[in-house]
Amino acid sequence: MSGRKTMLAVASIFLVALMLSGFASAETLNFSETDTSGDVLQGSVDIVKIGAYTQGSYQYFYAEFREPGIAHPTEDQGTTEMEVIVEVNKNGEDITEYLEITLVWTNSSGEITHVYGYTVNQQDSSMIPDDDVIVDGARVTVKVPTLPLSDVSVMNVEFASTVFSPYAGDTATYYTNSGSNGGSNGEDEGGSSYTGPDESMFGLFAFAGIAICWAVLIIIWIVLAIWVYKDAKKRNMDNPVLWLIITLLLGLIGLIIYLVVRPKEPVQQNYYAPPPPPE
Image (tube, rainbow, N blue to C red; front, side, top):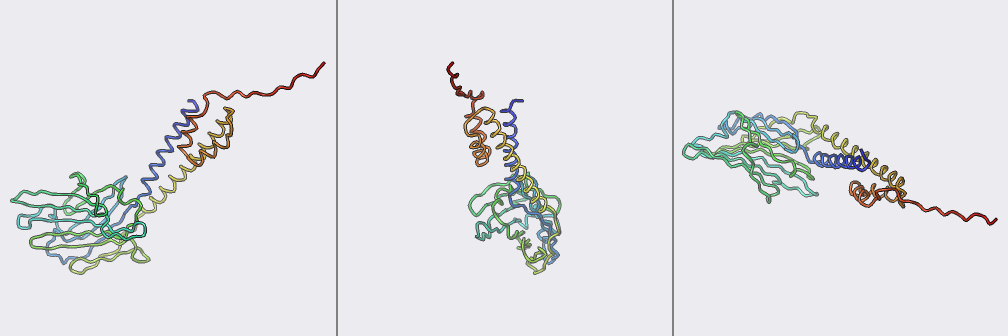
């Protein structure tokens, strides 16, 4: 394999590692909470457990209810709703409804319809595909891209459920920082509290993944710069050290510039030969 093809392969690996580090840097939520209340008369909207986890580029949220049925309202109930509201701190500013997920089910004359969507910072709204909402008995899981949670610090996640006729509802909130043990407190409409989050290693794994990605990037960056220096020297180019510095500063862009401008063959150097001494 030629030197140019080798460096293009290394550059491709560099680009992939850079993309992976960007995915890993997104805020990830991994928690599980049990809501010990039982005061909501409508069991299908009585939240008994909440949680979240991250897989790839998607963030999953789920809520479990005392009884199944929130996604299948009766004609008398009319409409049921589940919401997930994420409060964040972005650039030092607290935003209470930064990410708002809304799942609505309506029974009209025996036919159930639904509307799934989410809003980012009360501005950008998107519909959620049907396949991204999973109803499994009394548990409802919804997934959204992790991109809205990049470059923010999550403060709390509130889950809310509602049935409109007769009106009843429940709420449960997870707090990311609510004490030295990382626990949280929350209340439903009956005033009951639920326990703190289960310990999870996902956060540690995410941090380790970020560190590994950056370490790989730095190593590849240095290898690229050293190769550029040696190749420029082998081709008798002026200022190989300058190309080393350019690659260190610009990374992949510097490598591309070098590959474009470097000569295909080594530059012939003209050496001065002094005239022979007079006889």
